[in-house]
Amino acid sequence: MAKSFTSAMIICALEEFGGICQNDLAERSDANRGHLMAHLDQLSSRGILEREVDPEDCRRNVITLTADGRKFAARAMEAASHNEAKVFGALDEPQREQLCALLQLVATQDSEARQ
Image (cartoon, rainbow, N blue to C red):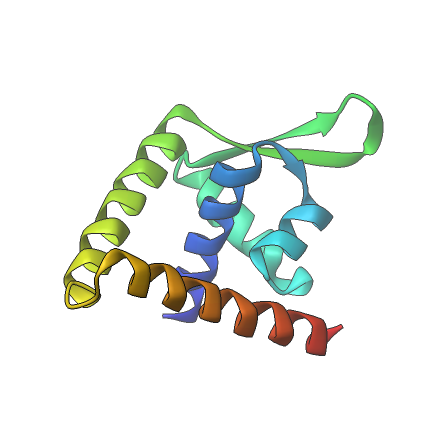
């Protein structure tokens, strides 16, 4: 389960931020840097992402989603939206916005506590 969750977070981060280097990807996806390479290898072997040498710094790789990876991300976001609508269907729009703001506050505080 944790492996699938981490892979999903990596895909979502790449979808949101575009091509980024491995260190930034680890930070933005909250992935363990020590395990990131194994996730990238697995996703690369499935044709979800690709790694290329950064033209500005040959010591770094830039990670990007492939066309199949973008399709996968779109399907995942659609499924997440569908499930979110089911789970939070009892809330009206202002309540959903309030819940989202509160959850973002908790996530930000947790992220700051980890640093």
